[in-house]
Length: 79
Image 1 (spheres, rainbow, N blue to C red):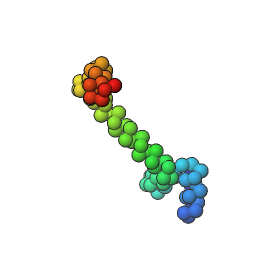
Image 2: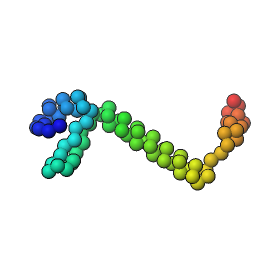
Image 3: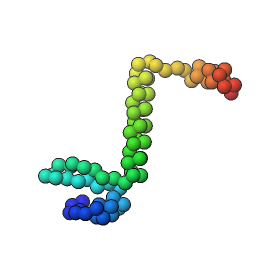
Image 4: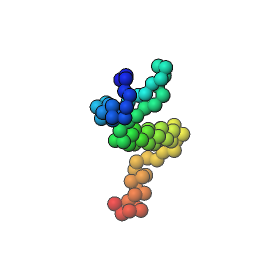
């Protein structure tokens, strides 16, 4: 999107597209997004972080068999 020059136009663009990239000299400088899109991004970033840690745990052998985990839950919580 080009030619956005005031806040109202930015608000309309964000409502329509979800985010707006502000460029200067053909370089992306700023991304403006709705709070809803920002929260989704933060949640997805957190999920990605946990998945990467989980994959590292698997590679490093820091895992347990499911039967062992279920047995521990049963002993600890009675189910």
